[in-house]
Length: 149
Length: 149
DNA sequence: GCTCATTGTTACCTATACTCACAATGAACT
DNA sequence: AGTTCATTGTGAGTATAGGTAACAATGAGC
Image (tube, rainbow over all chains, first blue to last red; front, side, top):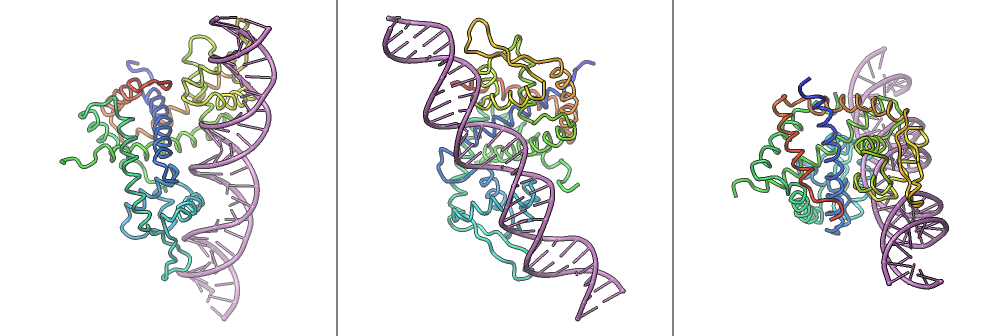
């Protein structure tokens, strides 16, 4: 074959990049000193992308984790005052998660930290390469099969 | 600005992809049923890329983790019979990690699992896009500042 | 000799996410 | 009505990953 195991090599690179991204994000979050963990940061970002306050189950689906994991994350964020658990009057089983004003401020600070991390990770790339990477990542993420399938 | 916070958006995508890659790899490794965790798999792959048997410290540097983390991973792999701790006669402080025959067989099986995971992750991309992604990842990984700096 | 750096490890802690079991609630059906 | 089943979130426990701090053994420089 002309390209021996191209996909396998890509997997290698992806796994390595995965580790690096995780490390760098963790360090930047720690330096930001907001008392927010990487997973909590992810939940906050996801929260901001919903129109109204989502249910726990909605967050679990969007984050591609099991609902139980969301409970823990919300516990931490609620303790920090970044989010609020609001019971849904229409269905007493569901709890909706609302961003507080504190949470919005935190989100803003996180935004800066995330951009700093991005600059560090993407340092070796030119502007054009970043555009190309962004397009590829769009395709990768949006084109992926839904979590439930 | 024409592209408002392109790097921040890229960070979002990267973090999301990171999570997905981690999930998919974990599932494929579990299905392969080799008794190997994702981090152990990463160590085995790294091991195969060294010329001779590396020291624990070499592995820690290459894996971008603290030496203590390598100890745990090698413990697990040694229990599975995939690697062997070999004392270095030239320096009685160092321990070199050797791949056993069992380990080589495991590595081969892992290779298949990794390729299956890659196919799943990369499904939305065409061949050309995969080539482009591979090139970008090369630049990203090789061009990154060394861990020690 | 003495001092200091290197090497791996023991002990402990945190973060993430998983399974399983369960209580509360709602929905569907008899 | 009631009975059964699905949904929703959570308590309890586990596994994985990685981190810090202290330490014993060893080597290197003086």
